[in-house]
Length: 289
Image (tube, rainbow, N blue to C red; front, side, top):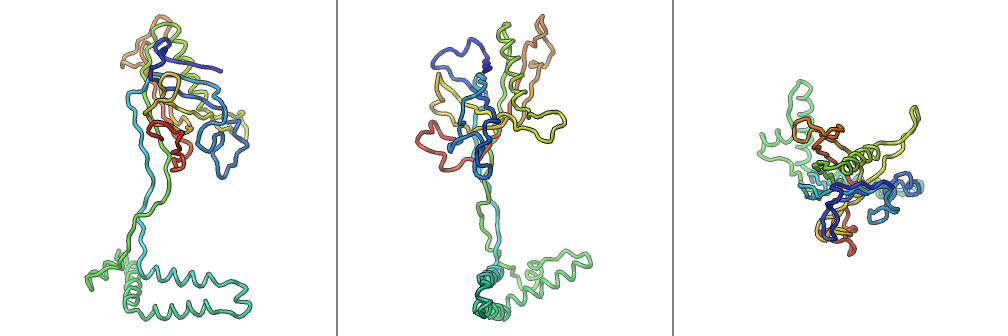
């Protein structure tokens, strides 16, 4: 197991805060349910096996979390709602009922359509819709609502509502300043850069039909030997982007052996699964996820 840390001698106290990244082998995750679970993690989104490598870095300068879910504006007019009710009534008729000659639901739906057709408001909307379609043939851009507004000063009530539409995946971006002060720190920095690059790359033979999933990562804010008592937690992530600027002071400068005097390493992690309410258990410390 390859372990790296920077600064090499600066993180020794039991009260020191630091940033730890565990790297895990995705090849051990083939036994999960691909349709319902994220491979290689338990029900709490934590790895089911130990890391194959650990990298320790100083706390980044910009620490923040952001949780969001997706919502969308949806419209359902009264006319559309009535049409849906009729359609659902017809769909509720089974083949067995039709075979037996029981067409009660279909007849009820037919009666509702006839009643709906008598609605003067619906008749006006249908006529305006046909007129708008006819005008569009000549390049006109006219809507039903615009015609109704011009004629009667009214539009169709959209019954607009904000509805939940899905979840999102969190992304974290961190930047680290690396300034090796001796040969030991030089080797540690060189090793961790190579380890990050290697671990985020997919596997697979040249010319093969398939690629293996890259290793996944678990970032942690630490204090001494345990998780930080206040800061947020992570679920397992993939390292989506990594960049290293070898001229950290905007000037090319190296030691005698060619090691850059100052470097900046940027890491972008994205969690592999969303955050759910069930994840906030009593065992999750700090401010949660």
